[in-house]
Image (cartoon, rainbow, N blue to C red; front, side):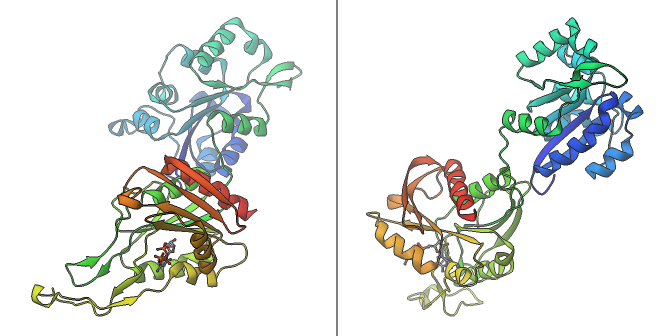
Length: 396
Ligand code: CTP
């Protein structure tokens, strides 16, 4: 698993243009894929395993009969978000079109439900051969993307349609086909999620109802768009997300320390954690007897967002969240945004327990330029992408 968490299998067929897949591998890494190469046996006559291992940074196993106890074809098939076969020879296309699975690559393809892309490269006569064209049509009917080869000079003197396509054309077609949006590539996104807890004694705490769902949705969406994501999670029970660096905290002071360490290196901070505004002044190291539990003296926590904004560089973007009950007061929210020094603020209406722990949200997005956007009830995943769009626009 890479940091970004997008996994791709690059199947390499036995053609003279196999060397071009070395450049393709690099470009696939550039758009955020961890790449595992599965070469066919015959392709190793053109480019050896050492090249693929060095470029991918991963071991290469072309053989179905290695590590059989790990059932490698099923493991690889399940772990891949996308499979790209390049170059795809007439033989490979024929095998897959007809359901053959007699080596590791074709077995992985037959066991995978991931989107599959073929990048054919062969002599023009082989490409225009009726059998090849029928097989290509079969693959396309099954929703495989088969990229058209380029026209040009072949190995030797020949000329025609069959050349390995330009790498930029392959990347563009793959991005559209697999709906890959990499607009946050190279950006560092810091997300806080969940709710902080303030210990009263070793058994009790003051907490809140935040589940962390919105913050986790933002973290995942940012990862999917190519960002490097750090998630500071406070008491959320949601499962960890692959490809996201997750730091666990509990109290507001722990969250504060993590933020102080992480904020300087981020481009955008999404402050979606519900931070306890106050903590017991004198937490007890022993369980407090109920006879002594009449009042709890509190002391205010620092406003972490305001603290971050007072230290922020011009090129950093801060996104605040607010949860209000009763009538939504946009003017008051605008004041909150200004006071906290945020660039965007998403205002949730949590009257009667709405939003907390749910998969959907509704509210208003307020921009520091004064504009507002009403967000009707929608999945938190959808809102996550909308918030990322607005943050990215602010980044410029
Ligand atoms: N926040 C923070 N530190 C705090 C309290 C809140 O960083 N001590 C952040 C939250 O993560 C959120 C935003 O500030 O992004 C707004 O939180 P909210 O609780 O609505 O704001 P408050 O300043 O506590 O205002 P109110 O008095 O309305 O509760």
